[in-house]
Amino acid sequence: MWEDPIVEEVRKARDAHAAQFNYDLRAIYRALKIEEAESGHTFVKLPPKRIDTSEEPLETSEAG
Image (spheres, rainbow, N blue to C red):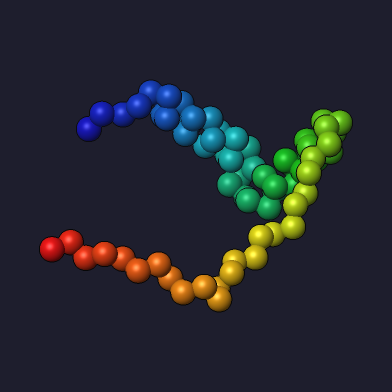
């Protein structure tokens, strides 16, 4: 099976970064928030979007 060298490089970088935090998602999140705060950039925080469940689902056509 063919493997994309760019995808493999990204996966290795992601794994190395996660390993620095013992794969603890909370620790990774805290580190990213600290890095974000220290960057001096302004970040936009949007409220979550609501999903409108009142609409009926779209009908699917059957092949035949």
